[in-house]
Amino acid sequence: MRVRVAAVRRGPGRRQVLAALTASLWAGRASAGATPRLGAVRGPQASLLAYATTLGAARRLSIKLTISDDAAALARDLASGALDGIASHNAQELDAWNAAHGTALVTGFPTVTLPFGIYARKVHSITQLRQGDRIVLPRPALAYNRARVLLYNYGLLYAHEDNGLSPDFGNIVNPRGFVIETVDLHALAGRLGDAGIVVMPYDVAVAAGLRPSIDSIGLEDGKSPYTQVLAVRAADRGAPWLATLARSFQSREVRRFIYDHYGDSVQPPW
Image (cartoon, rainbow, N blue to C red; front, side, top):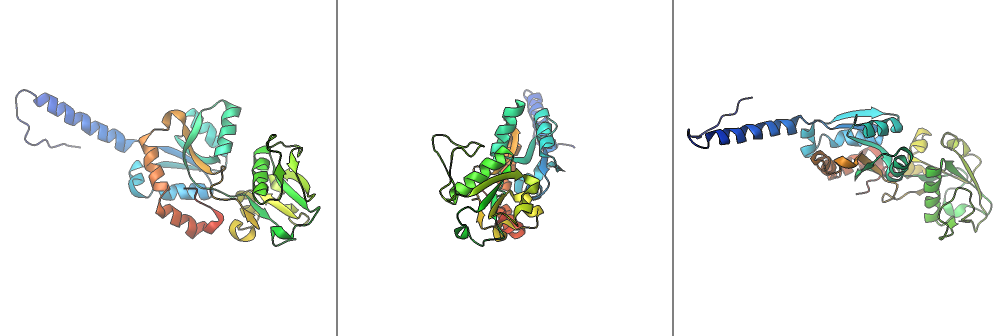
C-alpha cells in the first residue's frame, strides 16, 4: 500500500514527518488486522453474536466466531488465550468457573437472558396449585438455586433470610406444603406428566418443544442476575474491540432481531 505525502518540503524535519506518517500507517494496519477470536454456545447466543458483528463499527473488527456445544471447552480456550471472548456462561456460572479453576474471567458486557420457566400440564396457572402438589426443580446446585429464586419471586416458597440458600431444603419456608423434588436436567421434561409444576432452564424447555414465553406459567425476568454475558480475560476488559462490539450488540437492531426470532422467550437485559 502506497502513501502519497503532499507538500512535504526537503530540509530539517522531513525525516521526522515521514517517520510519523509511517508509524501512523502501520498502526492503522495493526488495528485493521486485529481479529478478535470469539466463541459462542450454539443457539441464541451464537446467532445474536454473529448478527451483532455485522452491525456498525463491529463490521470492521473482522471477528472470527467459533460455535460450540461445549461451554466448558470455550471457557478453557478463553483462559488459555486461544479465544478472546466467549458467550457461553451467565454471570453466576462465570463466578463458579473462576472459583473452581483459579481463572480470572470477567464480564465484558451482558448479552441476553435465557429465562428459567415454570411449566405444567396439570394446571394452567400458578394460582391453581394445591396443598401438597409436587414441585420438581433441576440439579445441579447452580440451576437449583436459580429455580428457587424464581419460585420465591412468584411467592410459592420462601427462605429464612439469615440462612440464604442451601441444597437440603432446611431453610425453605413452605407454607402450602408442596412436595419438593430435584432431578437431573435431562429428566425434567419427563416429569411434566406427574408433577404440579416443573422448573426448567431455557435450553431444556426448548429441546422439549416448549416455547418459554407461551408455554410457561411463570417466567424469569429479563433483568435476572443470571443474565448471559460476553466473558473475557480480566486483562482484556478495556480492549477497544470489546467496547465496539458491546455498542453493536446492545443496539436497537439486535433488540429487534431478538423479538423477530425469539419473541419474549429470550430477553435483552439492557
